[in-house]
Length: 377
Ligand code: GLU
Image (cartoon, rainbow, N blue to C red; front, side):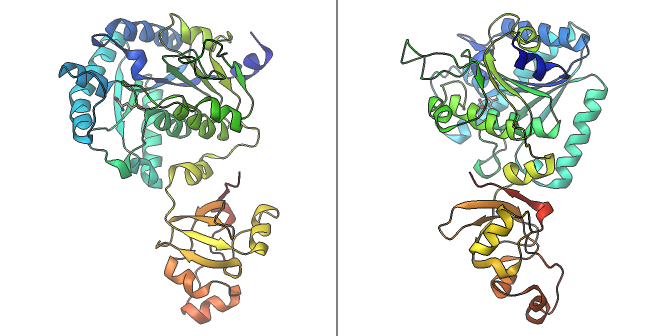
């Protein structure tokens, strides 16, 4: 075991395991044997005191197979219908396999709109925590049958990154059909080498992961690395490993050098700030002058009306918005204390002029520092 893995894994108890469609399926659709193999491992880890939560794919792949369709499903209604068929079967296989170990499973199907609302986010968090207290294995998937583009996580790599934040996971293991991240695409080059450790997600790392998804799953290595960015920003270590390999979870958790480990960032975001930075979709832009940029980037200050030069988009009080520099490059994201039409009227002004113009002043700041995250690269 390398010293780094030992250190990372030393206090790991709450583990999120994401299982990709490519792992769960064989020639005949969902493969009950591989599901049993993984479930046996998870049950053993549970008996050793680990809390394992699962994000699973495989609903669409299973439904598709049931309908005798090969290749990628092209339209959204086809995918949604396939997911409706496959999700039940997927859960039945998990439920049967965990049942052999005397463990119950709970199904949670999410769309992104379930977690962009702070209250619902906190409710879901409480539900997860109760399920964990009850030692029930929570199995999560995107609610594919109802999710349309605007409310989609996109792929289960992203869903897993969001769930890691909700449950405060100590580790996220992303089980996939390759051994980890390679320095070039192993499907195209025999010289491709596995990268065992990523300290920082640089441009080279992103370039190494440029390929898209397969016919079975939605995400490819690219979406796994995008998820790594989010997860490591939360201070959570992230490991991509080969899901079909026997004993893979035991190996990873016991610190064997398997797959690719992405180290957590030292200065990581608290859950609420993570929610602002990654979960919420921005509704508008504020162009800031140089003074405001400096105050935010270097002095840890809030955003005041005086620093806003231009407003773009229509948004309400409380909506997430992006602060950009004069060229439109993002600097920060945060929750607006005033609506876009109010900011149009008070931009460039001193705080003591707000009331004069609007007839009221609920806040001095346009975005309070507590509701702001720096996003400059
Ligand atoms: N939610 C999809 C399913 O269960 C999988 C999405 C993905 O592979 O990223 O089929």
